[in-house]
Image 1 (cartoon, rainbow, N blue to C red):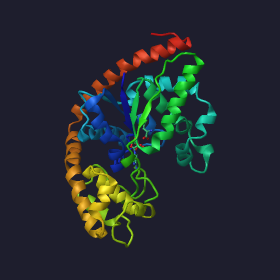
Image 2: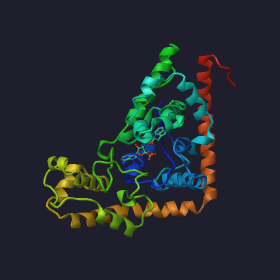
Image 3: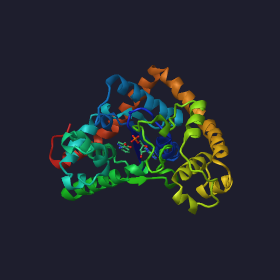
Image 4: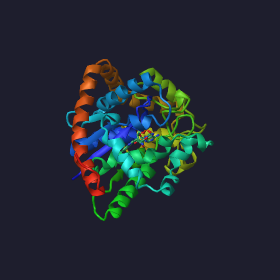
Length: 332
Ligand code: AMP
Ligand code: TRP
């Protein structure tokens, strides 16, 4: 049976990369398939968090899911830490995940920086928790951005290792769903870096709560080159910032990159950026208004997260018991 699962860390600054790479796909998928959407707060604490900010960001992330079009009545939304099975299964899977596999994870290398001795264990075992998130529900399809591909491959490998070790096809191997046209949205300040929540420059990203003036200003300040916009897609390979802005235009207009290039060929960046701002504001203004409205109704968000927790816990219990049974641990 198909089950879609995905999650975002509640670390604030949800941006266009999160929206186009992940959440927008979720909204389409929920029309057709059963889905579960998690606010992955246990992943967030792999780097230091301020407790009050974390609490607020959990609400903000849930509000963003809903404002972008996830219907919590249909697709449960919940906080990862409220379903104990995530951490429990992560431990069990960690006993089936060779260090050699974890040592290959590029995100750990990036996040740990130069002094690996000081990196915490949770940052290192982060991908095992992610595998547990998915396998806890026997999720089949995982819509994410390109940066999560390696983690998903690891989740498949761990599932396979467990199945082989106990000689049964217990875990379903999850499939990544990565939209090629929005797999990697880049920073507005540097076309070689991905747009990220943690970039120190606010001008590197457009967030889902930015107002119209801020969006326009950030686009005006976005890095470009002196040439007019190109005539062909091939020319974009050398012009990463132009490529990124045209990718954003294509994503919001729901056309191909080739069509976006044709539509803007020969324009100056000043003209193109203004058009792009109009398109983006039209799409994002209702979302940011709705996020703000929902954040004013914490009681509603609490109810959503509570119902989500119940639905997710009920699903998780059967799988976790199955795992324990196979391993030889007492079941409830
Ligand atoms: P995170 O912000 O790391 O919690 O990521 C949440 C989701 O957004 C994941 O599916 C990521 O792959 C996706 N994502 C994050 N940044 C980008 C980006 N710059 N371009 C495309 N997808 C992204
Ligand atoms: N690691 C993912 C990210 O940073 C978030 C995440 C955690 C996730 N668990 C997941 C995504 C399970 C999909 C499925 O983007």
